[in-house]
Image (cartoon, rainbow over all chains, first blue to last red; front, side, top):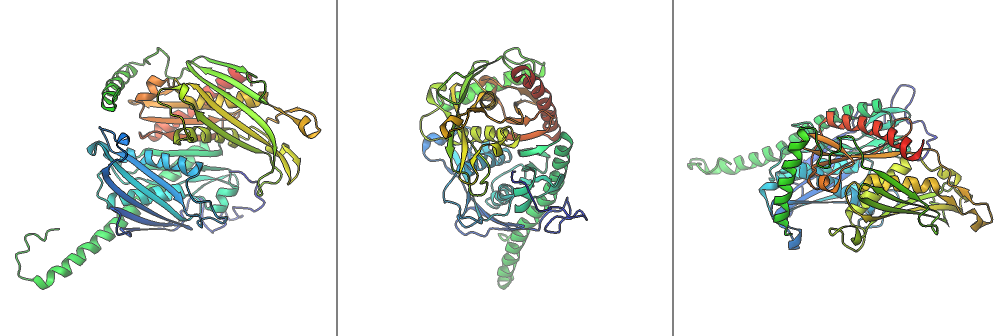
Length: 261
Length: 261
């Protein structure tokens, strides 16, 4: 949060610079299983954000001293492509990426049944191809879908959304301009099935009441995004089912006993 | 101790701390919202422009502030620069290793940085020597000397105490030495969750078995300026708001007691 804005970010009709209402999300689309080698993958477009998440594992954790005998270790790596932002970002992890990788790992560990896979690593790779504010939550949202695609047992797919303050008003899902010139940003994610908060950060300046408003808005948005995640998974697997069915057709008359899946 | 032996001990400890906390007791006899003794010795390192030696119970952190002439960032030509760094040096704990900053020290530095920056504690616009060319760069370096829990609050207290005493060495550029321009005094309060109870200012023993950590910084007005959830546990919405209320309340008390503001 920082620079003082000369531009008005909310107009006299209460609309934001991209025409959204204060509690309106940017368009979001999720696609599942877009990579071949990874055990699970997902692609998310969220406003101007384009993010891919891929999952490998559970696989033997290496080097050996990183293994935990009672649970799987979740290693998320959040990485921004050099070309993902206006001014080229120097490749490789910086301090911001290191912090984000840490909190995403912790959030994912809260939903995965890690105790079922001792001594293993679950590696989650998040690549931000294009950034437009809210990349950590977009990445986490995609990563949860990729974990489900990899068949990793979880309490639920984590969903989230940031809220913040722009021109003195609490708004949902900040875009780049609002993030640069806004007064607060609250990245937030939860386990939709239980409502438990797994990721929460904040910078800027909010009163207690504004903070509560931000969390309420984000919670509602996360529940909506949770449905998009489910639909994305259903789309992939119902397509797979259709393919299976058309394959079965010529074999008409076969017992089909082993064709349940 | 081997990792699995560790796990067993932590498991037993967690069970014990959970059990006694349900009876309203912490292992060192403190109340849930009670801080350990805070002792701050400022100007400990006189060669630095500001410094503070903080003891929070048995945790000891030394913060040094250096103020040097540098070039402004191109996007903020008329602002001074704040940079915060933390080192978890091996003398502070058998679990700390030498080497480049790891994710724990990076997270610590970034959370403290956010507390100072987002509260607008330092008036960076007053740290300009020649607009667009020369500004003061404020380096906050956090040295953890003895680790007995709650490094975030100890480091934030140390950074703030040191900054309040920091002199800008104007004599280096043929000006007068002046105190650092201070606008606000933020206070960071960290809580951890054991079972379903939240404790402020966790000791190492408590941190080792905690499932969730939440750090909330507030300013004099009781507004929230920075927040960071940590560890792989979860919080309910009610717990988040309770943590916010506790941080506002305890923050006020510590601001008055420690900083006299």
